Length: 73
Image (cartoon, rainbow, N blue to C red; front, side):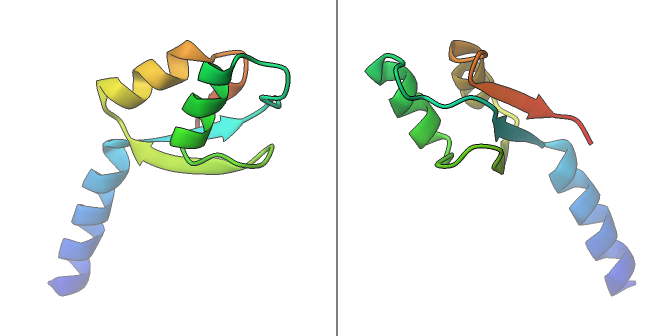
């Protein structure tokens, strides 16, 4: 029963997260864009971070859509 419960909890956790990938460099972008990218925890190109799927994080991604992509797996 413990393994089954862990699998169910893991499934719920994945449903509430999004994977964000840095696809373009923030060099030569406004300082606000650089701050948003760093706040998401992205430092290097093609890195993927997993963040909660909340309106706050979705809004951060929408501010810099030319630098970020939401990874669908």
